[in-house]
Picture 1: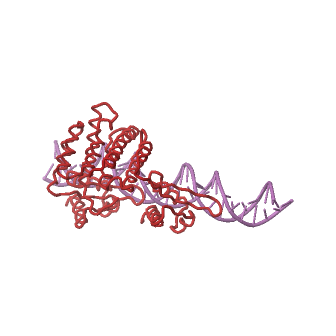
Picture 2: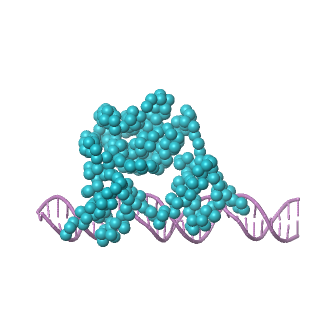
Picture 3: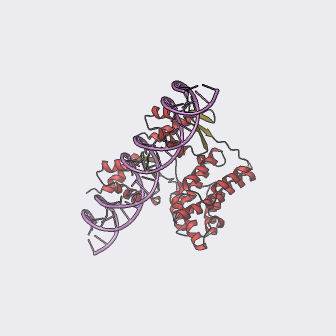
Length: 157
Length: 157
DNA sequence: TCAATTTGACCATCTTTGACTATTATATCG
DNA sequence: CGATATAATAGTCAAAGATGGTCAAATTGA
């Protein structure tokens, strides 16, 4: 069997031929392939993860959707994964600041963006026991990093 | 399927093109879209809340109306304290996002900065029980807000 | 056998509708 | 004229509908 997941992956990538993002209805797609809706999530999780260079956005309820966004794939293609990896599950304020500065040095963020990011992961932003702070800081930083690498073409929000 | 709520939101915003306020008849609007009158209230509540920068005024009875007023805030020193106040000790992701969008509308942050900020306060950035998330989110947001206003006064780009 | 895939039951969130309530203007009655 | 009934609006809230998400068990293919 030609691997359902592969077929769905192919289908989505074809849809993305032009444009860095595509929007689908989970249920419609599932019906198109005659499979369980959650199969779609499986494909997204295994073939369109951040490590694969994609970000998924979705919305539930009436008029819901699933949007697959392809991130920059320039020389910085692997940088995100590398950085996310480096951040890991917890990180100190200093290390976080260093990573942010690195982003700035690479011209991936502006001075102001860097400042905002540092503010988000500063000690006093996290009112918790220190070790917990590091876990939290890592989560916040990972989220911001992913955002920085997103590629919205002409997108607006 | 064109998302009734989105269509109504669009319609109202188009009406507001010129002018900071617009007045409509709830029932007429509902009839125009062929929906229940309370649908209008839903749209107003979810897309024209105070956090989104709007205020709703209305009057019942004969000649009744619903007036949507866009708040305008100047980037003066009071806005920061107003916002910090609004954030308080805890805040939901939606409210935080709305505040950030407001900053963007006021040209106090760029699109990218706004995106980074939203990412920093997103649900999945905070791996904790929900109520704790709100407290944390408030702290992170307050820190970023303060930073944004520092940039503004320091003026440096 | 084992890892990848597929499915299904149950959960979370957003939207739409409708029944019931509250308020205000206008017509009517004494 | 003043009190009251009636009509015209808008508001609330909870249930139903429409999507998407999660997780673990079942299945499959190498």
